[in-house]
Image (cartoon, rainbow, N blue to C red; front, side, top):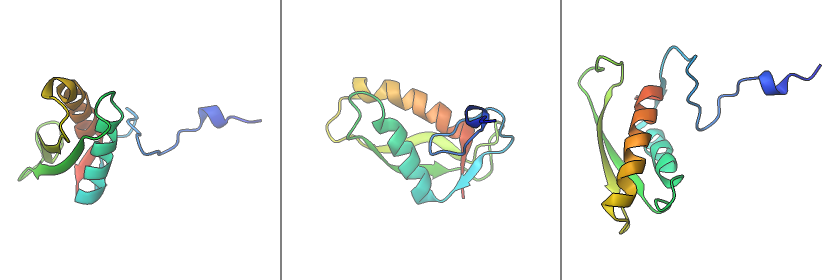
Length: 99
């Protein structure tokens, strides 16, 4: 019996709500994943995340890095990347912590 559709996989963009803990990533891996998320939005294909700000201790939600991302926008206007930023930061902070 093939139940491959019922199998949960831990893929690159996994945001499963059933994971009790955030995945801990190195700074480089976190930057790569958040950049990939940003680049998945229309008009943001050349935007990359170059820095995140670690927190001294996890916030009340359990995330240990701030809402502030340093971006290399490659000339993409703020009105284009700002909508992606808001969605990406919320998703990423709920799933990943900084090592």
